[in-house]
Length: 109
Image (cartoon, rainbow, N blue to C red):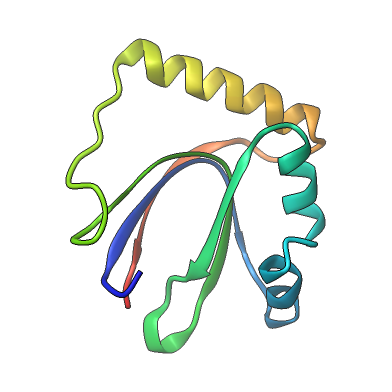
């Protein structure tokens, strides 16, 4: 991606330390390994622009909005409930702590 985007994720959000970036890039970070084992997705990147604030999302990606991505996302109440329930079960199965939340995070380029 080379333009700004808005990431829409349901699950857990982690602020990454600089020493975690290589493991995440190589998909060796224990959170990514655990997520993949149960069928969860992950997304990470710099969300701080020039100030560099790296975030990692674990859970279900609802979409990425922006000029080079989708213009809109449409999920019914039933689809959202199923996604929320399924994601929560998988996060528990993988041993993640924390309460899953809906994240809409701006990613400047």
